[in-house]
View 1 (spheres, helix red, strand yellow):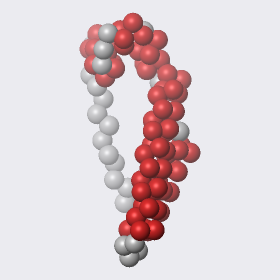
View 2 (cartoon, one colour):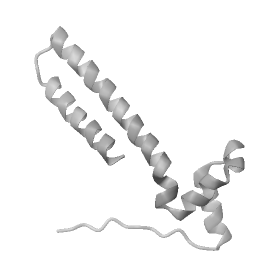
View 3 (cartoon, helix red, strand yellow):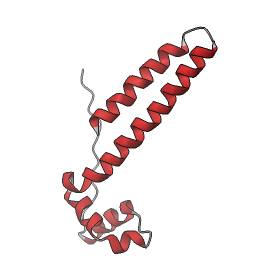
View 4 (cartoon, helix red, strand yellow):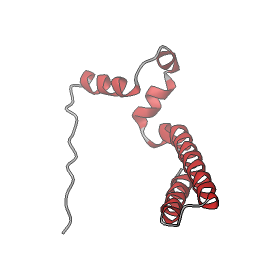
Length: 100
């Protein structure tokens, strides 16, 4: 997942460099290739993230295992929030701590 994400960032940097070049047919073709590669790498990273999520977070594993509910169109986020409500827990706000 991280490999494909980094590859997408690398292609994005390449695309930004190409954007500064004078317009030509070759530049447009190279930019089109970069855009396709960015989308491909993002799709691969997303697919990998989906596959490894149950191994990273136990609640995602519990939701992913109950595939009958997912086939009915159950929203994963809604299921997680319902689980939190069932346990009468408040969602914890994680604030951004500025370093300085």
